[in-house]
Length: 127
Image (tube, rainbow, N blue to C red; front, side):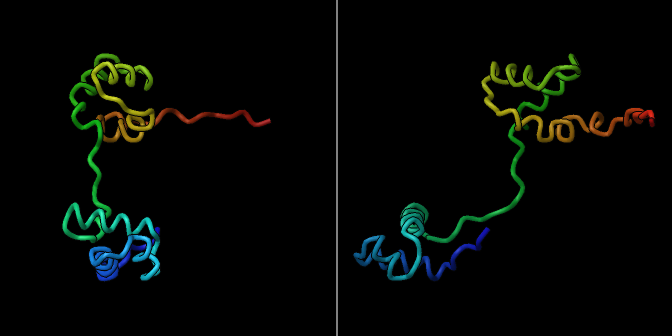
């Protein structure tokens, strides 16, 4: 992914728009994309600065609020399928895709099951 443009360039583009240039003209003057000029100007009006938003960091786990219910439900019926859990979450007003719970449900909700003893190795008969 490309790096963000410097704040100085963003401020010059926004200043040109504030002085009366159109966003397209300011984008052409500073050799940046029209969409960039539009977004920077919007951000400057909304937040007071055209600076880029911070990137990275730890994203909160979407199902964190459902942790207690999910653990209780898995303890009650450990052989629940993912699609059954999705339907039950939907009934609770939580709309998630199939990837959300499966992307780390064992590691984040139930570490004891994530590190369960490995199953016996499969033996193959050699011809």
